[in-house]
Length: 490
Image 1 (cartoon, rainbow, N blue to C red):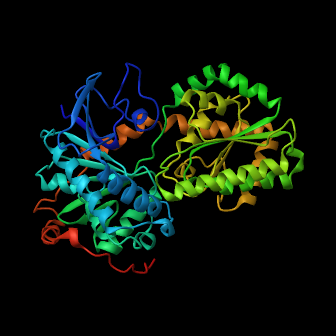
Image 2: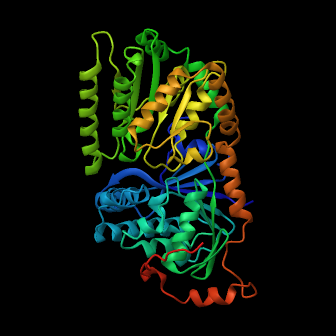
Image 3: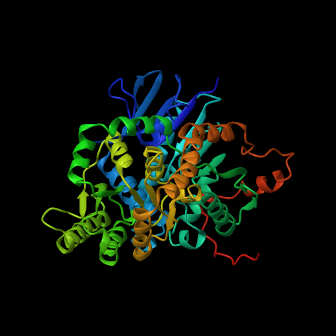
């Protein structure tokens, strides 16, 4: 039977017998069966980038990791991945910091990872690559002679051609993605933007979800990621009786709780959210001293300038708001920049009357789904959700808002705080049904099923597009330049 080989930027190597919690580990739990390999960066900085992976086996799964040198870390991770690709894909081209040396380092690290991975692969292995750090990986695997089926999943948004064109090497990166058999996205819109970009910037042939380019046929599909809903609901019920949740409840003194949980990242719309909450208190004074907002925003990527600037801005906004509205026995905004355990958050979600998830752009945003799963169906809270979170494509019964409009967010929070029980139950029932059906396990199995059974491998001579693809394959696509975007006729 074919092995599954998962590749990600960071590998969560188990340190204890306990299960891995959160993130990609949760999504892949059901498909990482004995014999599987999880390969990638260890998260450690060493004197030199290691050419041979260290291997640890746990519960039948092999975790194979490489260390990075400080120079490679700076160029690959801090430089190109998080200072160029991250802001670009989140529709913030003004924050893109492109340096040619960072891009060269990004590709060199991908080549190193591919060379190390190729030595671990056997014919028939299914390779599943995750996220924007590893876009060129399939190209270097193909150059090493690997013809296995290789899939790629982008966990963050994908931008349209007009935005992508601001990045000088966009043509190379699109051509890299076309080396995969299947490219998965969180939403239909993101998949459509990728196909449009290949058609407009590479002059690729697009037919439905298939992209013919560079001697291959690649498929672009939407595969929305989910959560492990039933266990999370159980955790929320148990955590609602925990000491931490009881302490939080006692500190509220009967006030309603609104909650936001995010990484401290400019894509999450936190300044707009703070502004919206201040407008709620200013425009709807009936909520003064009746609601407390808990915002947990764990600091991250503090070696990137834009993140340090955001942290300073949020500190100022939180201080200004509390200085304006606070009373001696009431702090309107509780702002915490430390991470909280996932089970603790589950208990907090369950007691919250309002969940505020208002990113400016997001691939999916699983906090929205966790909030829904954690709620008490008899007396549920209300989800306020950004139109531009990938979750909004599914969770249409939430109160959907434009995250760039603080007044609209404030109005939605007011509506959530005053919503009658019957409407809250009706909305929650519809949301819950979706969250409990589009699960993490379903996401992983559907993607892998499509990757195993699809027809995205190199076209044969007998196929209708075979001749055209053989001609395309003669081009050096690593040096392709982006083409001007064409106006599309409808």
